[in-house]
Every structure is written in C-alpha cells, then in structure tokens.
Length: 291
Image: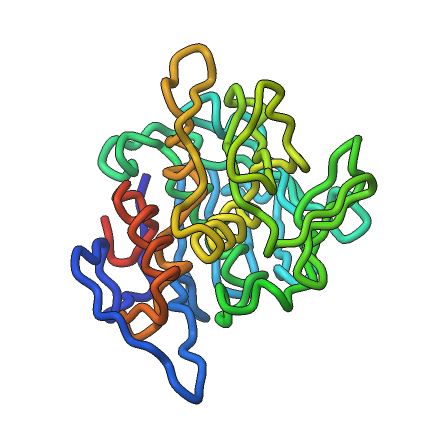
C-alpha cells in the first residue's frame, strides 16, 4: 500500500515521553488536532484512494464503481464490522442523525507490515475514527465535556444515547458525568461495551448503572471523565475470554493520547495529564509524519 502524506505536523511527534504542564489562566488552549485542512491520502494500489481531512472523508475506487464524499457534519455515527476481531479488511458504514446509512466503504484491505500500529493493521480505519472524533469533540475537548450535546451511540435497550447537559442520557438510564466512579471495558471483540458505575466498589452483584457501546466518541469522553473524577482511567483489564487477556487492544484501535494534549505540546491540568499518560503509554497514536 502506498501512503502519500499531504501534510506534516511539525509540532507533534509520535511520542511525548516528557510533556510540559501548563496551567491556562484567563483563556483556553486548544486541543492539538492531527487532521487538518489538507489531510492525508491513503492509496490501496489497484483498489481505491481514501482521503481524510478535519472536515470530511472521500473515497474513490480505481475503476470508478464507487465514489463517496461526505462531510463529517452529515455523519452522526460510524458502524464498524470486523474491526476488533480481525486484522485486515474492515467494513465502515456512515450513518446520519436519523440512523440511516449514507455510505459504506472497505478499509485496510491489504496487510501492510510496514505501516501497522504495534502489529495492528488499522492505519486507514483508525485515521477515520480519530479525524471524526476530533471533529465532533472539537478543539475545546476535554474541558467541554459538560457542555457537549452529541449523539454517542444507539442500542436496542437505550435507543439513542446522548451526551447532554453533563450527563449520559439514554431511553432507560441517565448518569451524570460527575457521578461516574468506575468504567470497565468488556466484550468479545465483535461486541464491546463500557460498563459505567457510580459506586467506588462493587458488591457480589456488581451491576452497572449504565452500559454503552465502545465507540470513537465514548472512549475519549469517559477516559476524560474518569481522569477528572477519580485520577485514573478506564479499566481495560478484562479480556474477551478467548485470545485476549485484556481489552487493551481497544486503546490501540480507537484512542489517541493527543485528545488530552494542547496544540503547543503542553498539558493544561493534572487530570489531562492522567488521561494523556494512560493512553500514551501504549504508543499507538495516529500521527504524521509517522511512517
């Protein structure tokens, strides 16, 4: 696979082993954004070309049988098939605010050892997820989590799950962000969820107060919530009962430590630093130039 980088982000390197902590006084420092106007283009030779910017995604097959150009403003959610239980050829479906499919593409169809992320063949797909999340969370993230009003997911039980008014709001359950004390990532690869608890410790029947799907939006939001509320991140210690002893592979496939990093390379608060260090320890960020 030929990868053509259209822009280099000079201010950001692949790892930040040491970060300057800067407390902002009298003004907000924007979150660093990996995807900008010029964006990045991936070319799967003989198959398709994928272009991703901070505002949209375009996809064109070589023979012209499929052409897609969708701004993120028209996308409310992304549905993935095979992404967490295989290592090649995923299906990415884009859905609008009504839950209607508005486009579907294939990604990472070739195994490319030279461009994997810690052995994960996910560069194209993760680029879409990070660019989409940066767009929806905005550069004010993570300090804006109490003010965001966005669709996070849909489930049969909760119907629509939104982040609104500083709370996770579903059809059957509501949890204030300030009340969250534990979040566990659980799943089998095909279906993965975040279990949310408002109690510090669970009893014999440790029933979550709410369960929401793992997505490119729910993960950074709840990582931020946990860091702010408790000084620690999401619990990824539970495996899938088969080939994965933990669910840490979810971090590699969905998360970037840059969600918590300022555009000048600094960290604004102690809880930003907690979240940043937790995710950055896995050395699996999308960054340019990186390959």
